[in-house]
Image 1 (cartoon, rainbow, N blue to C red):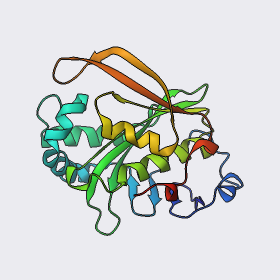
Image 2 (image 1 turned 120 degrees about the horizontal axis):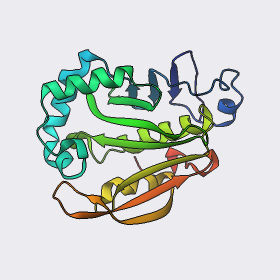
Image 3 (image 1 turned 90 degrees about the vertical axis):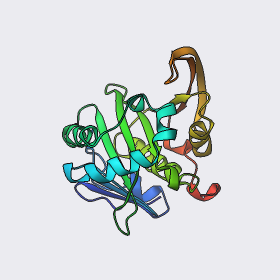
Length: 219
């Protein structure tokens, strides 16, 4: 996979790893981009102007999101969307939040994040959600692939993990497609949004060579 790297933008739309590793700017540590482009998506950092579009996407998907996402346990208002965008715009040290967009018109169809677990390792965690109407088209897989690659190539990660409720089958299918290992199942890890005890799956990857090319599975 070739990444065309500029100061604050990355293009993940092409296809070979060797040129990524040899790029002269790739040795800048802990540099989170404003934007990452894939073949079909733009992952961009939120701005306050995105609050209405974000709220629209969440509202349209709330039945599904409220089952799994901790932040969706109560109602989700336009004020909540504005607060998220304001926080995410200025959040750097702990990681970075992205809105998943269609590049043709900028429609917000979901969100993803790359969170720092331990900067000394370094290790990171990926999270994501998708607008219900855009589920099943491989968009989250594509976004997670780009963030995984970025973590290893640009941030020098030695570990990337993805966690989810064991009952959320569609979510844990994504790291499996990408080549992540099921490292552990954590019994009685938390209470879910129904108040029931939930086990969590932890998928982990330890180097870029484990990451499967997108062409190996359907999108």
